[in-house]
Amino acid sequence: MAKQTTPAEAAKRVMAGEQPAAVLGVTREQVLALVALGYNKYQQGRLDDAEVIFRGVAGLDATSYLGFAGVGAVALAKKPADLETAYTNLAKAAELKPDDGTVQANLGEVLLRQGKIEEAKTHMEKAFALDPERKDPGVNRARALVAGLALSVQ
Picture 1: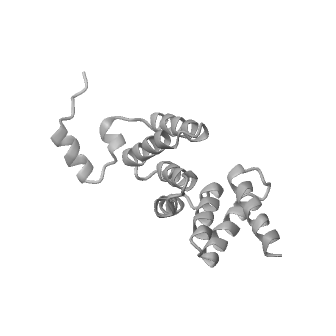
Picture 2: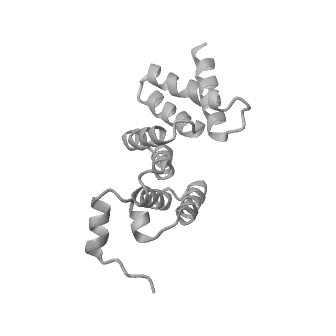
């Protein structure tokens, strides 16, 4: 029989830098299942539920970008958008996984909405470069946004 971890032992391990998921015995597959559940809630428009799940994922494993990306996407989708929360979480997600095109596109959109055009351009260009075959729906959404802006400027 496996030895039970006491709350004090668990706290000590977390304070020493171990991720809560590892301390609690939550597997990578279980974390990914939570991400999928959060994404489904997001797709259904149940943003509050999705946010709770994604914040839980970020809390379980702060080395994974998925929870941060989810919290950022939810904050961006809210009406009105919570641009500060979106920026903070998407920037963390981009730091952890700089080659995710959707994260780069979402971060670019946040910066664009904040009026930080040059910073937005950098992230949008990176997103486009990461998706040369135009298969990523998040990057394609950013392409449409940029194309729409270009038309309105003309």
